[in-house]
Image (cartoon, rainbow, N blue to C red; front, side, top):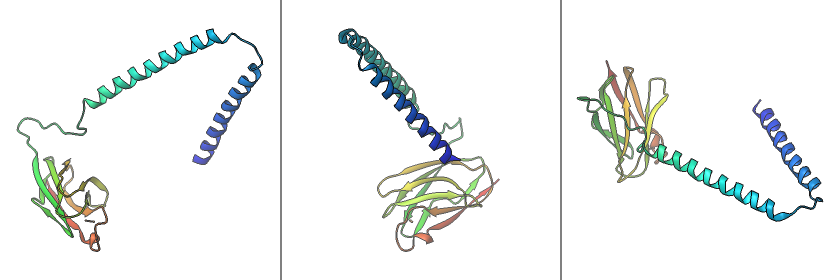
Length: 174
Ligand code: CUA
């Protein structure tokens, strides 16, 4: 299906390119005054260029307003629970492992040695949030658990012989 679509699309654009080539080749014998044509298309180019710059400038300004992205807004009296996470070969130091549903949580994730991956998985081992655990740097993960249950923290980046042992469980209750 995808291959057919790719094939048909390629063919379509090949036909367009061929048509353009044929058009240019057929018109190439005609003698025309060059200056007016040049003037006209320079004008078109200036217009097109300015329009592009304005267009992308607007998009850039519009999207940059939201930086940093995905920052949650906490309501009055709803301060997030800050949880410090330190990854190390080969385990996790987590300041809190019991959580409540609906409570906003910020995991502040760093590493004591090499780069690890901090991944939170639900009971079906679906990844629901993740960030990199980097030495001398703190990454934040914003999450509010909606479902009670046992969640797993797994290391997501190969970090040494016992990488697979970097497993930890956190509990979320109603
Ligand atoms: Cu830590 Cu893999």
